[in-house]
Length: 203
Image 1: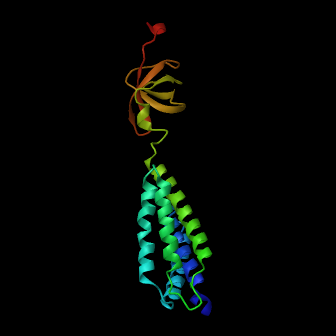
Image 2: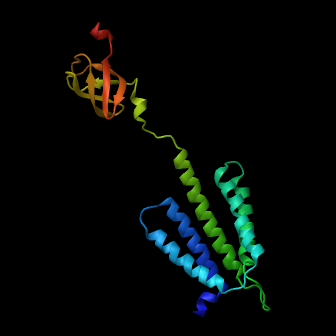
């Protein structure tokens, strides 16, 4: 079990488990990421519990989350906040475990690579998820109201119309022959209520 008492192993387990836990928030339901995150974090906790740590470095790691979340939220100069988060995260990682007579317990190169890859991946996924959440749907059913379409069949009072690039079931309060222009006046679920549109030919 001495393998788990290596600070480098403990660090990789801790960061890997944290990344898997956050990824599970972006892709819930499978259960694979959740179980994997729990197991890896449990091993990381076991390793860290048997290693001397610097509390101030752990606090610095926690503080690095503040500029990271700011970098996710803002658009202008977001790279500056992300860089600040990376610097704080890397320093906190390098000094997370107390030094020995031979020097740092955690490999600085490993800390830089792992911090950079994990922060970059999470930042990219968070930005994409936030953009998707704020995006207006391209196809809004309410946007059909007021549009002009064409009756594909006679409406007596129900039939089929073509509007918004799709064929819909429609109702009309009056008879509308096939081929006539219709206007959508309201929507009832997936059924549209329409009215005839006067055209020069119909006058």
